[in-house]
Amino acid sequence: MKFDWSAVGDFLPTFWKGVLVTLQALVLGSLIAFALGLVWAVAQRSSLKAVRWPVTVVTEFVRNTPLLVQLFFLFYVMPEWGLTLSALATGVIGLGLHYSTYTAEVYRSGIDGVPAGQWEAAIALSLPRRRTWTAVILPQAIRRVAPALGNYVIAMLKDSPMLFAIGVLEMLGEARQFSSQTFQTVEPYTVVGVAFIAIAYPASLLLRALERRLVR
Image 1 (cartoon, helix red, strand yellow):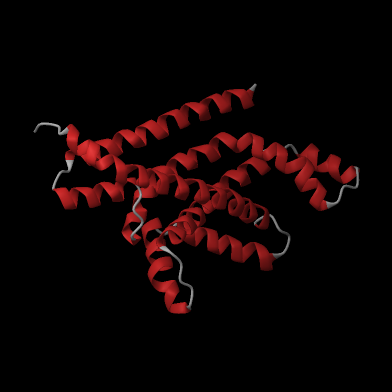
Image 2 (cartoon, rainbow, N blue to C red):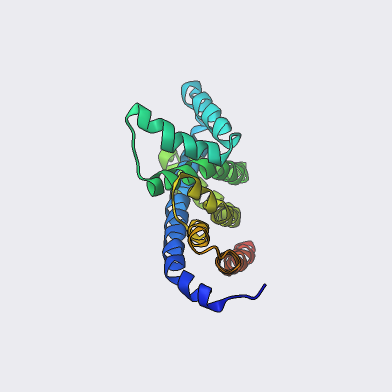
């Protein structure tokens, strides 16, 4: 089958719209995942069972159910309870919530990796608990786990096509729509495949460089 470059030219205008939507979902979803994951990780270390146990149950439930099911639940079931969001907003929240349970485990490993002497020193200096977390523990923990957090950004990029299931036209969604209208499948899917590589591979190289720098 001959590759039709004119079809690529026809697809590019909608493709760039899909790229923008993909990047929006990725950036906003990552911010939610990083922030909420930190909240989960700190809450799971709470001395209060009323805080620790519900957070553990929620994170385990979210982590062990498919992202696609969660997206359907947020988009189709939550409106029955009075919460209606746009498809893109639902996709961003779904990605962020799902991956926050994974970043929580990353944060937890980083916090556990902080030497016990750091906690003891903070106690000896009579630092408030909040100050201990923000000035002593978290800066060390986040520095240790930054590369692992970056890996989840790439994972979120690869899961972004699932948003098409709730009507979000990201890169792959635009390709599917274009192919259904023109009956040309090779060209749009090839462009999208190359785009994923063009975004993910440089990002992985940056993560490796960051990891080497942090090790030094």
